[in-house]
Length: 140
Image (cartoon, rainbow, N blue to C red; front, side):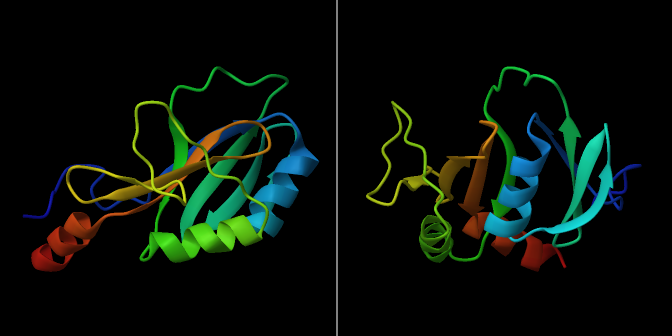
């Protein structure tokens, strides 16, 4: 059943904080391949992530990170992990999680997740969610 709440049909905006604007620009644009849409000094860099606005707020220091701040759902996580590693991105390993040789964790629901950091230390993720794709296609 499709939700009819006030935000159900609205486009999501993703937010993260950066301290080094040029370094963040190179990472998000050149390493991750996002399109830089706008620079709003001293407020934000704005990127397009496949139709989702990503606003990287400019700050003098980072707030303490408590988990993933941005994530991408990908169709084949192993392929994307290889592409990120070829681009020089290192995956994170976390105590208490059993991650495979590539750094991918498999959740009890079948989702697969891998984490990495941007140059400012923000935790980013990629994930493959077969159950979500099945749910989306059955409700369409």
